[in-house]
Length: 141
Image (cartoon, rainbow, N blue to C red; front, top):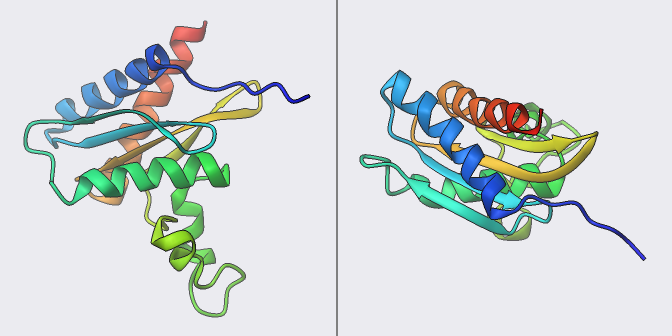
């Protein structure tokens, strides 16, 4: 038998609140998605002004981060021609994203979910995702 630890709705709301606060501070309305450890969507928020095209991108970033258990950014260079993961971005219907802004949520060394952010630059997206994780981490203390 396997016991699985995963984020719940309350956890997802904490992650979103942290990411949203940072997005407001930098003045970039974001699309924010949180998934469980298997990449299934738990919660999503599109801030007023968040790009419509970013709704799916944010969800796919969270899906990738949780399912692959790594940052979306880490796939960026690895997926370039001649590198070990070349072409991976076309796997599973194109849902694996190789652009920064998707981070796994890790508790006690175990991936329990993912957060994906989109609408800013890749650096801004990552900054907001990290702010969500930081707030979540503080809630566990």
